[in-house]
Structures are given as structure tokens and as C-alpha cells.
Image (tube, rainbow, N blue to C red; front, side, top):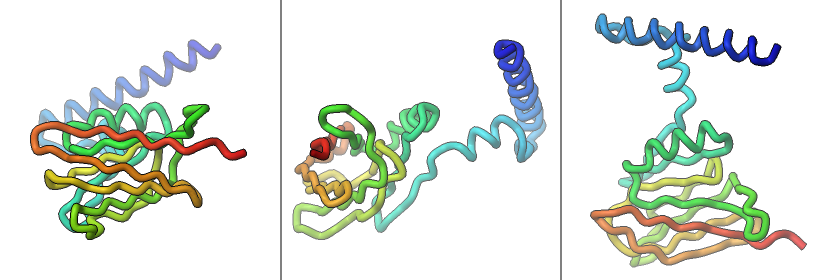
Length: 156
């Protein structure tokens, strides 16, 4: 029975995608209930703070895939997890300070993945999970992305 339900759902999604493609081919915006509109509404939404843009999420596997598809737009990519279990952490407060100590970004992560686009330079990134902070010095280059993972010790 479960496979029949899957076939029906896949058929409905294919029909919605076909309708969206036909509408786009005619210069129309996708209908609000089309697969394209549904996929766009599920994408993590970028934010801007000063001259820094960022996006976060990754709670579900679909969300992580969506973020990975956006990764090329961001030159600092961070992941938040517990040290021993590898369990992802969300709701992390992220503060990024430039080399002069000025805060250029202060935001809360919607999931374990947090991507930012910063001007090239040296930064101190502080990630706060509950009352535990983890900090890293990072160098953001103009020509490639920097990846930094943040791990917190398990509660005792």
C-alpha cells in the first residue's frame, strides 16, 4: 500500500511540475500551488545585515540539500554540532567581528548550517550554544570559500 501512495504522490508532483514548466514557457509565473512555487517557498531565505549576506538552516535533509545548492554564493560556511555524537545544533547565536573588533554580523542560526558572504579579511567568529561559546579565527579569501566547523562538548 505504501508504494501505491508513493506512486500517487510522485504523479501529483510530476503534474504540478509539468504545469509550472508550461506556464514558464508561456512567460507566466508559476501558479502558487505548483511544484516550482512549493520548492521556492521551502528554500532557506537569505538575509542581509550591513554589507553581509547570510543564510542558515539544515534541519531536514531537504533543507540541507537546498543550502548546499546555494553554497557557491557564500564564502564562509559553518556547521554546528555536538562533539561526541555529531548531533546537529540549531539556534546558535553567531557573532562575527572584523580584525578591528567591530561586529559585522550578529544573527541566530535556523539550523546546523550557516553560510555568510563577507568581504575578504580576518575575522573572529563566536558561536554560542546555550551558555557555551566556541570561537575560531578565520580568514576569508576573495577567491575561495572557508569552511569552519563548531563543536560543543556533550553535557555531563
